[in-house]
Amino acid sequence: MGLLAGVLKPSDGRIALQISEGQSPLGARRKEYLRRVSWVPQAFSPVGGLSVLEHVEYSGWLKGMPAREAKLRAPEALKLAGLEDLAVRPAASLSGGQTQRLGLAGAYVHDADVLLLDEPTVGLDMAQRERFTEVLRAGGADRITVMSTHDTAGIESFVDRVVVMRRGAVAFDGTLDEFLIRAPESAGSDQQRLTAAYVSVMEGDF
Image (cartoon, rainbow, N blue to C red; front, side):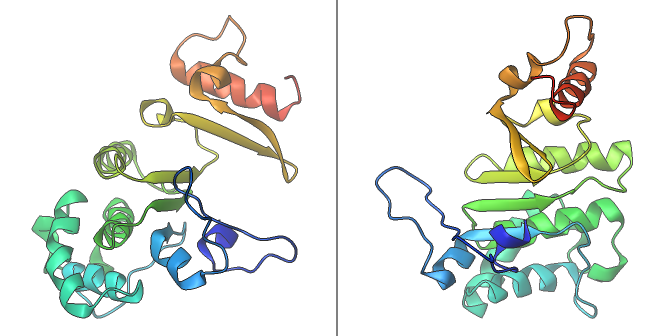
């Protein structure tokens, strides 16, 4: 995720972004690439001293938005993330689930084409996880979302493609339905099938 977000530099090869067919991949144009990609790391910590609204404005400014535009768009991003009622609260005082949604608001404010989420549900209880998923579905319709996770609980409700990495290589890449086929017929619920399919791929039975 750090490589895709531009935080780390590859030791070999290159990373490029191509949103649609016929479009030139963004690789050498680093500034444009970073503007169109937003990353919410697992250990996301709000900047101290800022309110929730100010934090979203600041996120937009960091991504190259004029301060005035960031200020105008921040309220709508907060609403999309379900945090509009907490706009004046200190960002550092948010709960774990609210903090993750603040990260999403920071991505929504500058209208990123690609949203990178690194283990976004770690440490969230069931209610926080469900609220986060609702926000992700609401704001993800017009962008590509790439999420890394070891927790398959509930992902069937919002993913359409699954990639499984094993020992640094791609062990599976396909649709959700193709992934679920990897589960044995004895698996029951969707969650049981997801877990069984993941175990099957990781153990090399594919």
